[in-house]
Length: 165
Image (cartoon, rainbow, N blue to C red; front, top):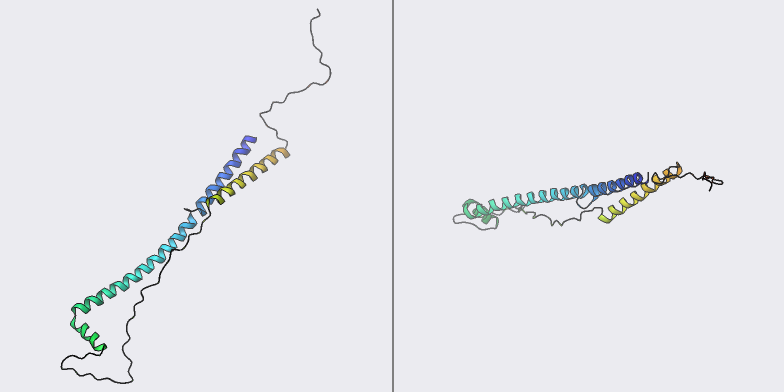
């Protein structure tokens, strides 16, 4: 019975270690979900920055090639072309200047996980607890080791049938 108890306790300890490592270990499910969340946040910020980059690229190309866009920017700055007159009206607000948000700095967040030695320590504790429970169970139910052979001892004076000389 001791061998069976030892094997079952070993199995429970190993199972505990495997489950803890799979769920909460360094490469486990918990850390993977944290990394996926960080990946989604980075993807969203990358998409926003790419959108700003596209808008600025279009604006740059328009400023380089389209004379009407160049003229409108010059008028905003107060320049006047030939044969044009500038009329300033007080009380009207100027056109709002477009400010682009360059985004925020994102730092890599630490990933939380159960360390390897904690998984191993929990597995050893489960092994010893299970082995002690099985051992106490065997002792309380009077089960002995099947490896030991019971020898009956006869009490009293042994009598031998020996031939008389």
